[in-house]
Length: 344
Ligand code: 4SX
Ligand code: FE2
Image (cartoon, rainbow, N blue to C red; front, side, top):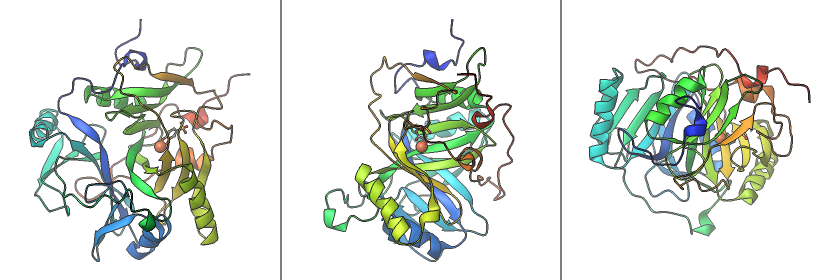
């Protein structure tokens, strides 16, 4: 018998939930040199500037119908400012506030417009320590999907997912399960090792909105952005090489085992990791069975068998706390990189 919270028992997508999260929608990165970050995100990757001033740049992808999917905000120290989820309505937003207040979490309302283009929004420090935001309304902008002559760089389309380093995946996993997330895939231990090393959880009917990875945390491991196609990802590698930005390429291009997506990981000028991601699969059927990967399966993270760089497993962005400091972190009892390999 599977125990409660065992991913094998997680079937389906939009489960009963205390409030209705639609999808991972945008994120705020605190950056130390806004002009330099602009070169990377706008000039090289081709994000579209919706609005900017001396302190912040509001960016969107070519598929976005909302004001932004990424905010770069100038700060003294690099960190992830907040991770934001779209909820289904203003009523659901009130239910989110009730939920987090009942859980004893720090909550704060932002007025409409306090974050440019956005309606009123709820900021929360969740039980894991993550700075989350929930909103239901955002200014509509022109969707540039078929404005092919304008598309540049990696032809970024939208935000796809947040990936978090957490010291205890099971705890984080239970928390997102309670919020109505399904589980598409996970990495588990072998031979009596019941550790869950990573889990991919979704509200939208794709592989994930949030991935949880065992490691020092809570920290932001990466932001995943949907790129137009594999060609866009390969062209990005050429463009970065051509412009002398090759050192930003950390892992890939390649094909993931988990998710089947085509990927490339980059490190921005502050070290924030972003992933260009495309071509995962539909997960909306209610009888979906989560895919289990063994932590000893060498194809799990790289379908072509490439070695994952050690720093990809270990490095992450700190999270900003409600008081402006950074969220304290702790180490996991077991981490994928440190996993002793079984004899093959
Ligand atoms: O490295 S994995 O193949 O496990 C992987 C990492 C799969 C999907 C992702 O979005 C990711 O960041
Ligand atoms: Fe990812």
